[in-house]
Structures are given as C-alpha cells and as structure tokens.
Image (cartoon, rainbow, N blue to C red; front, side, top):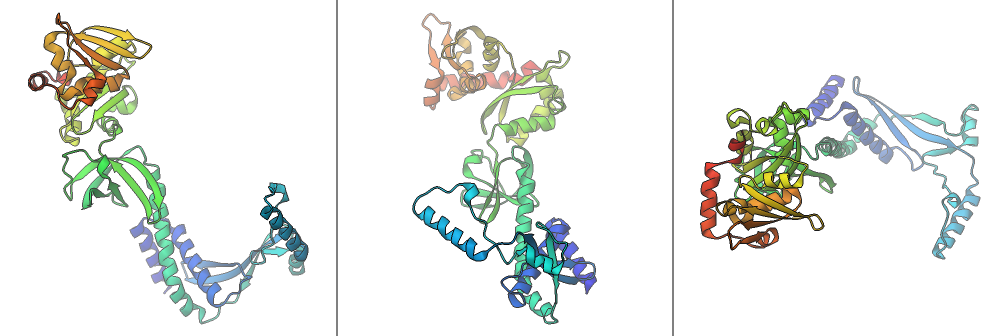
Length: 412
C-alpha cells in the first residue's frame, strides 16, 4: 500500500510538473481538514505529518506560547476601541490590542504546567490519537481537498514559471479559436492571443507553431492567464537576438524599433566595434538571417538602418531607401524639414505614407518631406497619419522601386 501511494505521488509530480513538497503539503492539509472535521474541536490547531514512504500519519495540536492575558480585561479594552472607532476617532497602531487566540496560542502559565522550561515564542506540538475509523473517513473527506490543493499548487507553479517570462519569446502551438481570440498551447500551460495582439490577415490555423511575445501574466479567479502578442515591437527585437549572435552577445545593440505589424518594420542598430558591420551582421550571408526573421513574421518587410547620434544623419538613414538632399532641424519642437529630389519623393513618403511615418516614430522627430521641385510639394508626418492613401501613381512608383532596391541588400 505504501509503495502504491508513493508511486502515485511521484506520478502526480511528473504529470503536473509539481515539486514533491507541494504535493505532500497538499495531502497533509487535506488530512488535517478531515481530522478537524470529524475528530477535532474548535480550539485545536491541527497539523498532520504524512510519510509518503510508509504511508504513516501523525497528528499534532500546535500552539505558540504567549504571555498571560486577562481575558476579561482584554475584552473591555477591545470594546473601548470599538466604541472609539464608531465615534470616528483614529486609533494609533500601538494602541491596538492583540486578541488571544485559544486555537493557535497557549498562555505561558498553562504551558509551564506542561513543562517549566517553556518560554514565550516556543511552539508546542502535542501528539493526538488517531482513531481506527480515521483512515476511512479521512479518505472520503480528503479526496476533494487534495484535488483542490493540487489544482492550486499547479496554478501557482504555472504562474511563478511564466511570470518570469514576461517580455520574452515563447514557442506555442495554436490550439483552437474562441470567438475572436485564439488559445495557444505552451506545453505546461494554455495562453491567450487576444484580437488586438493579432497580425491582420495572418492565419492562425490549428496546429501551427509560432513564436509569441509574452505581454502579461496575471492571476484571475480561474487561475493564471498568460497574454501573448504577435504585434508587439519587441518580438522583432527578440527574434533578432535569437538569429544574430552579435546582438545576443551585446556587440551589436538595437537602439530602436518602429513597427506596423504584418506590413513593415524599421530597426536601428549600432556597434562601438569598428570591425563589425552592424547591418551586415543582421542581414547575414546572402540574407540568411534576415530572411529567417521575415519568414517568422509572415513576410513582413524589415528595413535595417544604422543608428547615428547626429539627428540629421539618423533621420537620413531612417528614410532609407530614399536619398536625402538636405535636412533642416527645429530643435524646439523637434521638427525636421527634409528635402529630396523629385524622383525620390514617393520613395521617401512610402505607400500610404508608411516610410516617413515609421521613420518619424523611429527617430522621435516630426518629419516634413519637401521636393526640390521649383513648386515644392510638402508632405507632413501628421497629415500622412490622418490620410489613408497616397495618390495611386505614387504607390505604383514606390512599389517598383522598393522591389528593385531593398534597403538590406543595398546596405549589404
């Protein structure tokens, strides 16, 4: 019998991925509740010690030794404090009266009747008799408590494990769809991908394995909830750290990311090591590294640009693949007027204003694009954000140029 119990406990630990102490603790708490219900009294603080090796159980009444208290005088003091609170008077912390708890405490004078060596703060464990019928009744009462405790222990284990993974990538399998959200199987837990964290037009077919960014882990009434994202900008950062050793080691640093999930991202990289090409490191030989990341993001275009401390150089890099002729800065309101050749205007603006919008977000400046045409055409960042489309002719020109001159290959 003992071997069967021990084997069952080990099986639970392996199946639920729980520590042995948590399972033993759950069993002991359940057995204590069963004993208290059928054989204990209200002034007993029951503690059960369970030995999984031989299935033996020991039951104790646990008391902490406290100083002697005049219960009548204590009740008067408590009543006086209640009246003062009801009258709206504030009570200082040092005026509070600690109520004597006969269930978990024993007065010093009573303790010394048991053993004269006892002093305040000692813990007395008095062993109690275990009736023969305790085994049958305990099994019935403890069963549901054990199940509940194991569920709580499993929830706590999942919460503690995934709470440390906030802000990192996890590999998950799309399980099923519930309404507009998807349930993602992470192996030891099930997470949720809410609609606002889903990439538009990205298919989440059951069984698909994808990398997800852990946005938040919090406890709810139903247990821990793990919220995932496919749109968070940091998912791009984490993917680069996985694929590019120079970033993982810290030799190349990602200074900023601006992203429109599912469409395009711009990433600014920097290194202090002159022997390392930060853009080339990210692109990889024949584009192998960047293509792996693009595939993971469902074909999302990625522009890799070099970070510069000089705002003018940084803005010029951020507007890549467009070539900039002149930049004028207004430091007070962080606005930049960028002049480009007329044939570079549509490229600088991008499809639906996307290129200049992402560049502005990356550098943290408002960017106005001006043509060097005698009758310059001005495109402002805020205007482009309000507008949903750029003229059809500009879109077609931009698409042709982007296909012919991708910024990563040009830089490589």
